[in-house]
Length: 323
Length: 303
Image: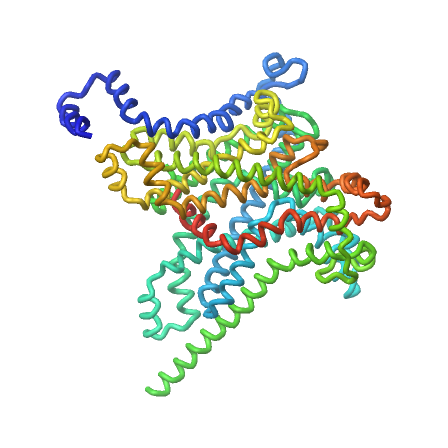
């Protein structure tokens, strides 16, 4: 420590030549740097090493020739995706589902948080919170099984109820039109309770004096919620909204895959998203190049969307922007 | 004047009452909606197959039966093996991942670490741009040769940018003066991390450790991608996935217990397996719920 103290003023007066100061900088930070090495290696292998693999998007990959000898086809894979209409369908489905998840999800989370805050019975609050978090802690496989419990044609709860009131049973697993509702409902079921924590914590941060002052001034409960609580939540809402918009091209594979099933072609029109399509390209059709082309498209456009969202966050609240 | 006051207070009471009433009903119903599906799975798992075929899945078994559980446990090596595999992966992954995440998060939060912005961006960038599934699959199977190896499930889940950022947020609340005074006393950076930072951040470590552990327990995606269907002991969620999606898989595993094929309770066995695979998490999580709450409130707003 004494050494560094002595060195600091000297550096300020006469900076060392850049080569040596770069080395010194490295030497001074060596332990902390070493502590980061495992993480750096990890991300190099699992996140950066696959990146050059996106070259697959520009070739027509076949097993015998491998990556380096398969013919280079430029943008033909993308052309194919545009011409078949796949790219548009996947983009539309992915974005539309995400918009529904984000908007409905946040609104429902706010409603839950606001109501929770109004309740006075402590045990009721605790128990209901615990129960509402429950769906967040289970695996996607179980979510799929639960949906099957409700929707199965022969034994599902939905059809049991429909039959008991004299209506015709529904063949859910072959009716594409109802799946947007099923998927969005399942998403809301699984994520609302846990997601409401952020809003609930924000309400906790609300100054009690403001609430008391409003009560003295005669504000009723509706007015308190409308003019104090909701405006207080607005910044959190805007930030969370913009953050999630950054991920609008990323789909929740586990949810879609386990709800719809691996090869239920009847539902693709309304349930196929980018992730499920790439998965099939890899595991079912073995078309590595098409799969990579879709992934590259997703990453590039996703990146642009994130930059835009971050630019918006910066305008709204500079403290919360990512970079 | 007095009338006006009175009517206002009555109105206030009324609006408060309405909000509370609607609140209790809404929250109560929503909590019920979140719970009932679990009871549906539990109820069905204890229902005899003939009752299922007659009345469908139900919350309350019309005809109580533990036959499904009996068959699952008749040949316990499969399910016990799955349990051990998942517990092993979860234990090792959580211990190693937690240590690495804490170490990285601490180093990256040190104000005097001159490479912290560069490395932070290097890590954060991976959430913005990724190679997608195909190159990742080729990497694991062809270049790392981890097909049918539990490491293919263990390794990719070790670190995540999200948890490193969460650790940074936790460390931020520890005054830097602690580190500085220890440096003056001659402690090295690694010693400071081990002797000072780890003991003072136990709530943070508990939170992050639980996030990692939950991730491993519920992990099925990498398992499905990289572990082949004829592997004997597969992670629990993959086991459940196979039971749910492949009737053949149930028949094969029931064949060992000498039950005639037509008597295998396909539906209730799915539910029984789900109960066995998920039960521990559901029983355990109310006790650690507060850590998950802390995690999302720390990590959510500021990255």
